Length: 128
Image (cartoon, rainbow, N blue to C red; front, side, top):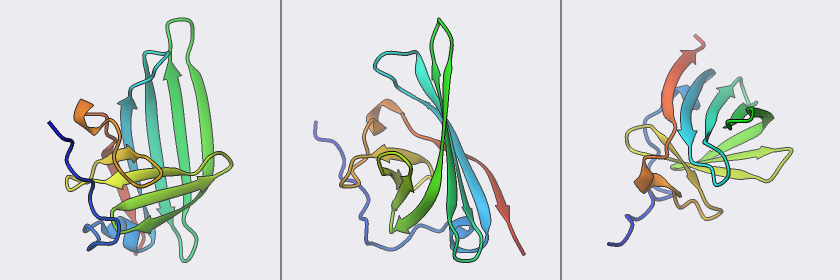
């Protein structure tokens, strides 16, 4: 069975007003990990005027103690892709039709989507 094609990066944008005007939206989920019990991931995207800061918090869950990493930087949206540019390697997330985010590869193809490895929207805030 062949994996479904990723959403187009340049097609019509999915309706997500929190990303089109000032405000914030947050996603959360536990992603798989090769050498731990999972990665509890929280991603907060904000928009204030022309500024688009993000905060990505990853907690690597392990029996011998959790390790937490926080990264911040700027994000941009390209169709169904959310690109993060922080201090580390750039990251890509694919915005799915159900408004979940799937980690993507450098070309914007979702990885781990078949395993249910997505981040679910957990909160939004709009600024009048």
